[in-house]
Length: 400
Ligand SMILES: Cc1cc2nc3c(=O)[nH]c(=O)nc-3n(C[C@H](O)[C@H](O)[C@H](O)COP(=O)(O)OP(=O)(O)OC[C@H]3O[C@@H](n4cnc5c(N)ncnc54)[C@H](O)[C@@H]3O)c2cc1C
Image (cartoon, helix red, strand yellow):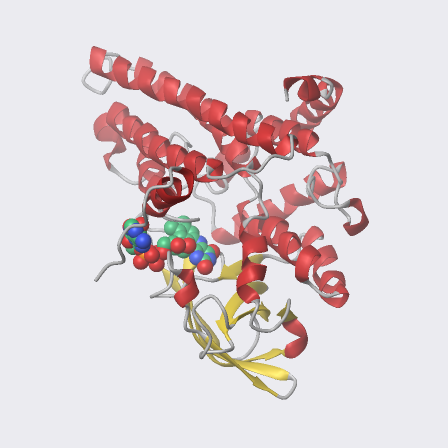
C-alpha cells in the first residue's frame, strides 16, 4: 500500500496546496453555533468549491460527473482533507455515498439521469428512511407497507431516526410489499420525494439539545411505480448495496481527524484549571497516553482494511472491528476532554456545525460520541458479528 501512496506524492502536494489556498481559515468561527440555514448554505458553498476543483465526488465515475479517482487517490484526498481540518460534508453523506452506490447498481437509466447530476449540483440533499420504531438492529422486521395501486404504490407507516430529513428533497425508503413473505423477503426499495402529500416530519430532540434527526410519518403517500429501485420485493438486496457503498474511507477520515483532535486535548491538558492547578497529573498523563496509543492502533486497523480493499481481498469482519474500536475510543477520548476541562465543561457550549467528532467543545463531543455506539449497527451488533462470523462462536439465543 505504501508504495502505491508514495507514487501519489505529487497529487498529495496538489491537494494540500489547493486546501491551503481555498479553505477559509475562519470557518470554525463562522460555524460555531451557526443556524441550520447558515450551515446548509455553507455546506452547499464548500461542496461547490470541492466540485469545481474535482475533489467533491472522488469516488464517482467520470461518466456521471465524478473524478473517477483510483482508490489510492481517494485515500490521499481524504487524508489531506482531514489533516487540513476542513468541514465535513455531513448533509451530503447519503447523497454522495448511498445514492450512487444504490442507483449505479440497481437504478434505471431514467432514475440515474434524474438524480445523479442533481446531487452533484449540490441542490439535492437526501436522507435515509430505513429504521422504524420496532425495526432498527432487526431492520428486516420493518412494517411500513407499500400497496400497488395502478401506476403508483400507496405507502403507510412510520420511519424514525432519519438524519437530516428536514433538509432533504428525497429519501431512500424501504417498505414491505409482500407481507406474506418471510422477513427480509417481500421488502421493496423506493425513491421518495419528500414533498409528496401525506408526509409528516417530527424532529427528535437529542440530549445535546439539537434535532438532527426526525420521525417520518407516512399516511397514504403515493409513490410513482417508476420510483421503485430494483425488482419489486427484492429491496433487501438493494439495501445491501446502499449499506456497503462506503468502503472505509469515511472511517479513515475520522481516524485522521481524531489525530488532529488529540492536539486540542493535549493543549487543554497543559493549561492550568481555574484553581491554578495544572491537569497534567499522573492519572491524566496515563489517560492521555492510553488515548494516544489507541489512536495509533486505530490507524493501523484502518490502514489494514484499506490495504485489503486495494488488494481486492475480502474484508470479512474488519469493518465491524474498526467501527467498534472507533466508537469506544471516541467515547473515552471525549470523556477525557470533559474531565480535563473540569468545571468549565459542565455547561453545553454551542455546536460547531460540520465539525469533526472532537471539536474541543468536549461536553457536546462527549454526548454526541454515544451516537457512534448506535448508528450504522450498534456496538452490541458489531460484537455479535465479530463473535459469530469472525470467531465462529455459536449464535446467541434469541430473546424470549
Ligand atoms: C446518530 C444516528 C443517526 C441515524 N440516522 C439514521 C438514518 O438517517 N436513517 C435511518 O433509517 N436510521 C438512522 N439511525 C438509526 C440506527 O440505524 C438505529 O438506531 C440502529 O440500527 C439501532 O436500532 P434501534 O435504535 O431501533 O435500537 P434497537 O435495535 O432497538 O436496540 C436497542 C438496544 O438493544 C441492543 N440489541 C439489539 N439487538 C441485539 C442483539 N441481537 N444482541 C445484542 N444486543 C442487541 C442494541 O445494541 C441496543 O443497545 C440513526 C441512529 C443514530 C444514533
